[in-house]
Length: 237
Image 1 (cartoon, helix red, strand yellow):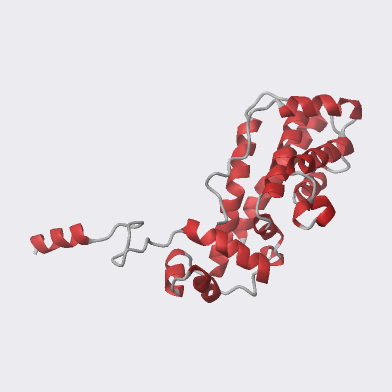
Image 2 (cartoon, rainbow, N blue to C red):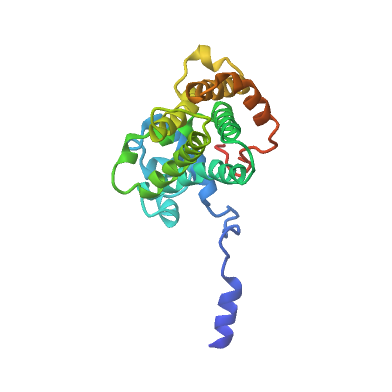
């Protein structure tokens, strides 16, 4: 009996190793990119797990081994998509820089990311279904990102640098402005990503700065911060 257990233990295939037929096991990373593209193309309601399985050339059971249901998939996909930005926000807030500089840098980097990436990914944050029950994790990820902007805006208000009408509303508006290129027309899309990033960051800061004459100096200081949103582990291939 013991010998049989030892043999079974040795022959059991670890997760992530090739299957007996030589194909690798399906991972979350394999699913996220194709799922984002299908949902962006057909909407959340119009994308089924069966259709996603067909796109991936796997069985639906393989997907349900990784995700409880379609809602679980979207929640985890959005949390995964938000992770690089949230990690970047935490890093730069640890720097001893003025709120204006950190806000400009945050806006610039976020727009640069969106304008450079596959638009299927940021479009997920605007799915109407996310307002419904069952999407708590996705809603939390979005609130965390917006909360970063609100925190910096409130710090700028406390230091006498900013004068927004309402910090919470302004943070929401700024977050939406960073995603402008998702719906931008051909003319705007012709602008290089860095030009879009610079234009958006300056538009936002100019709207709340008490002294707009300081904008160029803030932009120069932000450009000197050597930190970026790291998306090496997030692709949609």
